[in-house]
Amino acid sequence: MNQAFTLVLAAPLLWVVAALTVTPAFAQDAAAGEKKAAMCIGCHGIPRYQSSFPEVYKVPLISGQNQKFIAASLAAYKKGERKHPTMRAIAGSLSDQDMADLGAFYEKHGSSSVKTVADAPAAAAPADVAALLTKGACASCHGPNFNKPIDGAYPKIAGQYADYLYAALRAYGTEGNPNVGRANPVMQAQVKQFKRAELKAIADYLERLPGDMHTVPLQRFR
Ligand code: HEC
Ligand code: HEC
Image 1 (cartoon, rainbow, N blue to C red):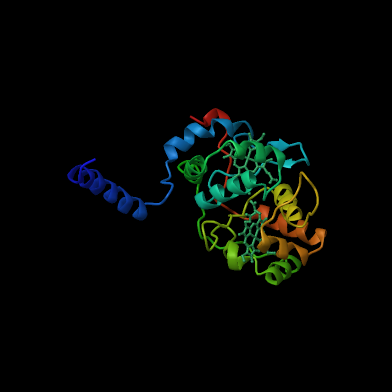
Image 2: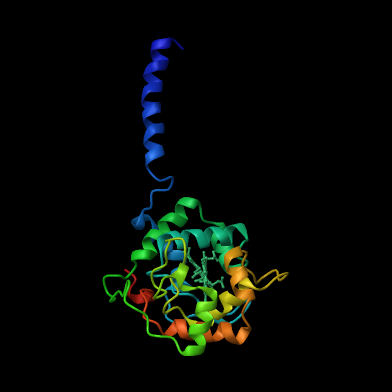
């Protein structure tokens, strides 16, 4: 290959490398995410749908959840850091690009048809629950109203189903179970300081808070 030819080839290549460094590695494409969501709606598109294995609780609300958190939690299932078997199987088939796209789609999913609360203040917690939330400094990460976390990689938890929240909190404290468990060190340390009844009281309070998450029912999907 002569030198002039090499230069001609190399110049656009350098430009591409420069362009890649300024754009995020996985440009999110909500429209692509919508197509990929076909394999999610059978559970996440049915209001109050119950999962049955390994435990019975409602499939979490994900429409209106943060893009970054959706992608991060899918990656955690794929890596096995979150052990839930069904979500592991599903996430195992997704690429990083798929996860980014699905996150972009679900973050905005149905937002035109629901009243969003964004940073509206949360209703005051009963004194016993307020003391638990203070002890765990939960609002310092999940936001004062639990609907606006300080970082998009942290989940919104206001208005999420209480039985799911309770199961999720218990999962951070579960060790040595092949089907139940979550490896996030921050939340693992958090839940250790609470009794189960206290985690349940927190979950029950969080469900009652206004939040941006909702289910977009299957029949209105398109
Ligand atoms: C068979 C039912 C089912 C299907 C299909 C399904 N999910 Fe899930 N999903 C669940 C259940 C149950 C959980 C809760 C798992 C746990 O306890 O960790 C969950 C959890 C999640 C979470 C974590 C939410 C949170 O608040 O931590 C995300 C994100 C998610 N699913 C996205 C998806 C996407 C995207 C798809 C399609 C590619 C999908 N799911 C398909 C049942 C399902
Ligand atoms: C230092 C920051 C921080 C603090 C403090 C914190 N959390 Fe979290 N929380 C996180 C992060 C990050 C995650 C996501 C972990 C993962 O990937 O599973 C999370 C996940 C959760 C989940 C799972 C939500 C879901 O949809 O999967 C619940 C429930 C939760 N936190 C409740 C609480 C409560 C209640 C407290 C206080 C007792 C608390 N958190 C304190 C950062 C924090």
